[in-house]
Image (tube, rainbow, N blue to C red; front, side, top):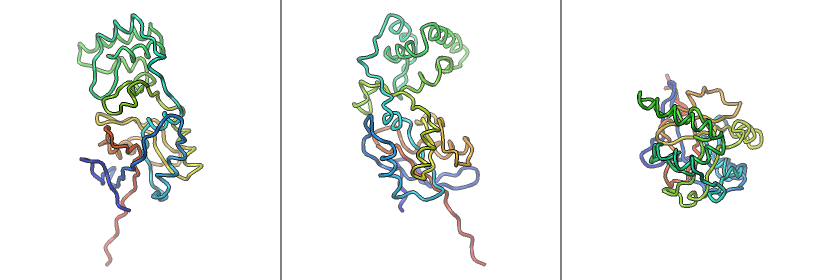
Length: 238
């Protein structure tokens, strides 16, 4: 098998003294309601070997689970308009600087918590600390993707929530297909492990080290699955 990665990404990576090879698996564009087991069966099983680990983007699992919020169902109110004016506007996706995500945050965790998070964020920014807003409102808000058509126009009018039961999904894939996997929320700025198969013996730090350069990319690559295989070294004959 020929291992191939996305542009500007390396096939090999060293983690904890071992060398691993990564292969970016190209898939079709995944739509809401598809079956993730079918996706793994089609794209992963033909090249998978025992001991491999597949890193999977949380987005395609969430889409398969229909964890979708439609723009038309988010009714933006006064507080979302006001508070979003004081939030930052990241270039990597939609943040609470956009009124629709601020309203989503209010709908999810309540206005009082969002007000508290906004005040705390404003104060801590004065001391150079960022990210406090999302620490307070939680992963469900920070993990919302979509409502952003800069890369995929299909995501312009939908928000994609975090997948439900990440570790359960990983264990289901292993039980039914024999594929070890980890579910990650990753981009070029950072990576987060959401869940993994119980059969995996590597630590969270090691697993994240395998994808620390975000080999899946964050453009239009359509490579949400990364096959990872430890490179076996042959001992020289005596």
